[in-house]
Image (tube, rainbow, N blue to C red; front, side):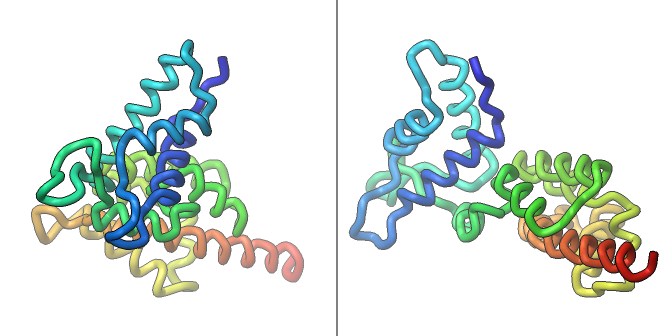
Length: 210
């Protein structure tokens, strides 16, 4: 039986939530069964695939545990099957195809705008794992390989300042919770642009300086 990777299941869940997200307060509500049934159809779940069903439920639970979703529609309907997007969840769905909350889509977008070597990619994948698990301090620490980061500190100040500030807050925190989800989210969203710049510079060196 083919194995469906967790990041692929997560991507399908997020895409389906985006598709069913109400546009106003008068439309259909978000409900657990409609999302899970649609995801099961898209992933080809059959009666003999309890492993896949449980994998879907695991990723579904993670969306609640890490704060993208919360139970309830309103105070009159505060319990399952109703649920709603949190502020962080709405932020993730704004550009769900390439948001770091969707690692599969994020990595596809990254590969479309530039080349990243295997070492840097290993750091980035670890960072994304930490981010989706809600481990924001760990995501900030492992986010960039030193070779990639240090080489651009003088080339793109706005991007590297974001990275440097996050790193410094982790190493020398000035508060109890120095690294926030917004900080890591911003850094991850900037990374494809940094990769694009890297690829452009590499092409220029190969074509014009060698």
